[in-house]
Image 1 (spheres, one colour):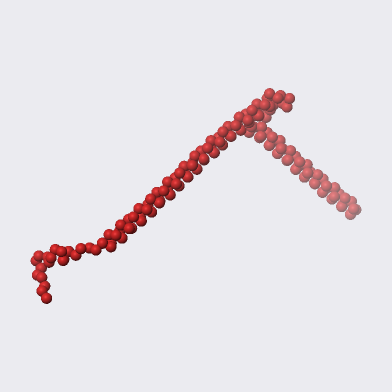
Image 2: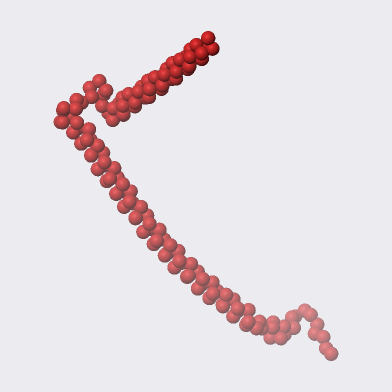
Length: 142
């Protein structure tokens, strides 16, 4: 009797495992079929009027569209590369101009400092000796 219970339990577990495998297989099949339908729909084709495998003219049309799309993307990519090159060239020119202007500013700063130094070193003439005593104030005599 115990053997029969174990045998029955083993058969039930095997049946459950088989149902799980069947359910997983069914879900995977649905996913694959759904993915195929979505791919056809996204490519612009209608799943109801999908081209037959024996129709080469109909199968060339999507590939021609794909080639045109690819060529368009290549042209757009080349234009983007060309624009990037122009921007890089402009950046190099701006950096050179900035460097040139920075050097000019440094030269002018040095000249300004030298001029300020020369002005600071010039003795100021004394106004009291050259002009005499101011009028209205008595001169002190020693």
